[in-house]
Length: 366
Figure 1 (cartoon, rainbow, N blue to C red):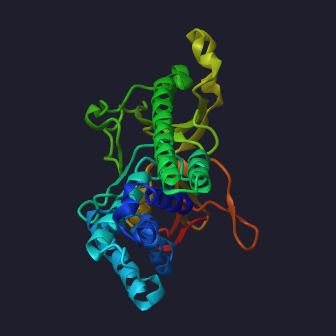
Figure 2 (cartoon, helix red, strand yellow):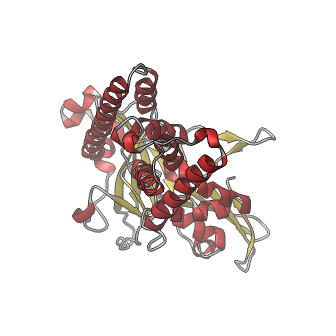
């Protein structure tokens, strides 16, 4: 989630019984709720280094305990350096560590249900995990958290009551999005109609609720035929009922937007077959040049991050080949703009190869 949501959630936790642990717990919870994103310091080494470390060790089990100790130490040291912040009701250091660990853990748990995902097992495993329920910024969750902090500030009872209400409503938001996500996946095959091919491999029912990537290479389809690797439903920012369906085929990605409340889905199948004519298609052909680009440093880092990498190649008259990887999760939607006013798609990796397929340039975000 975004850092404003994490901050508001940490402040809300401070109004629960956790806040009774003593003075300093509010500061510890707010700092701890943002602490895992300290990995942004890796950006000093460039975009590739940041992508390599983002939501990695600071979101894993060692990071939870290590950051809890650091946050508790910051609060304790700040208290000691400023006598005005010292009070007989100050929370002891051990309690600050425990409270900070709760804040860090909730940060990781709030990142997990997003389609962006997190690597909560790092450094023991660098795989990404996600649940696809929530966008990075959920305006409804922000409104609920902010409202709970703004109102009811008169008494401790009102603050605790509001915190309980806010956490209950927040749980309801997660539950509503989870139910809508399940419905979107159930309706997804009808979007593609007769164009939806059979699956490449049987789906893994053991962890159907938890997505993990990078995914293993699926079994190749029969010559001249394509197959379905996976269907995912990606949340959108505005409505919990609008979803972006991503169908990964053996040779392309097909994208379709869906509203689970659309009345056309309650009509006979013959009337919904028109949906498949509105699909957006992204080719994904892994040529030998793409295979070579995939083993470059940028290729390894980007493919380790990307859940749905689509590859395109362009060759020029001199024999040079440009390979572009795009993460289809972010390939459709608004573009960013650089200082020269050029459109920039940040979740792309461009690798240029010479005629001998040696990498001559590697660029992230163009």
